[in-house]
Image (cartoon, rainbow, N blue to C red):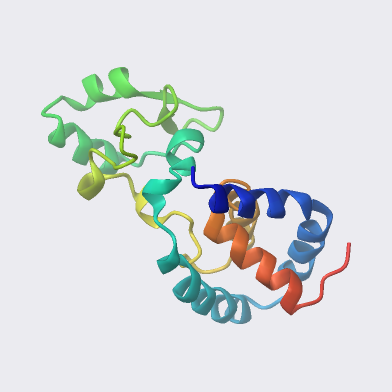
Length: 166
């Protein structure tokens, strides 16, 4: 991973107490306010990053597979659904399908996705900043800041913008 991407994650992790305080603050804000806060920051910051220079999400965070994802990827690989599931997936503690092993088996050596056009919905929507800021999405966002440099940068900016103290 590029050094500046790693440094962003190091900065984020060093602010653990302030990040917790930020999320306590954000959880008290109305959803509409959060959406209008995150969307412009996403637009401003994400274009500066090249995900193929990082791929942390593909090496450490496995997506949850919906039935449509399994159907699409089974078709892509010309496999039956059961064959695709037995080859690539397992069920997690919540009963959801996830990769049997990480990193993602479709991650190529150049950090590009073999199935990019057919990737799971969770991968398409990562890091979920445009999903609408529910409490569930906020929880994911806090975790995603640990692995995704642009999310970390957005959250560090919010720490300063709202002058969050530990």
